[in-house]
Structure formats: structure tokens, C-alpha cells
Length: 86
Image (cartoon, rainbow, N blue to C red; front, side, top):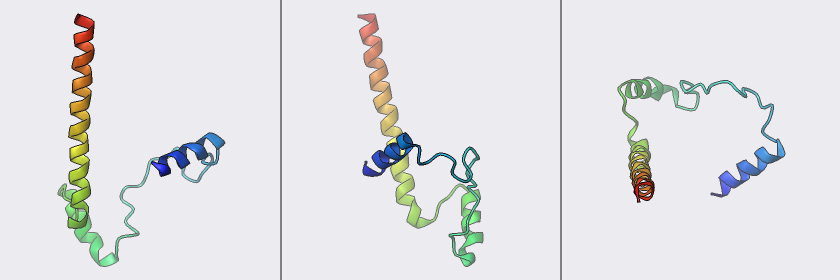
């Protein structure tokens, strides 16, 4: 979590204020870094709710993390309810 700590430190020092585009939503359709010959295929995949094969492991990991987070929150919730009832 070194990157997160560095970002938090920079935020605390005010180094990330006034950056270009601050306060505006990200342009998630910006595909300048995708090779031109792959852009149309990637856009079709994205519109179909799919991801390129090389990104599938990250997507699966994200789903697992979401499920784990929900289980932890559920356990915590039930623990708090039991405490309140007891």
C-alpha cells in the first residue's frame, strides 16, 4: 500500500490541488492508448459487457473482492445486531 500512502501524503501537502481536469468526470471512452487496429473490437467487447482476455483475471479478482467485502460486511452487521439484542 505504498502507493496509497504516497497519494495520501501528497494530498495532505496540497500537491494534487489545481490539476488540469480537477472536478470533472473521467473520460472513460478515451482509447488513445489502445492500438488503432484494436479499438473497434475493444469497443464492441465493452458494449457487450465483455473484457479482453488479458483483463479477465483482473475482472474475476474484482468480483471475488466484491463478494468477500459483502461477506465481511454481513458478518460485521450480524455481530453488531447480536450485540444490540444481547
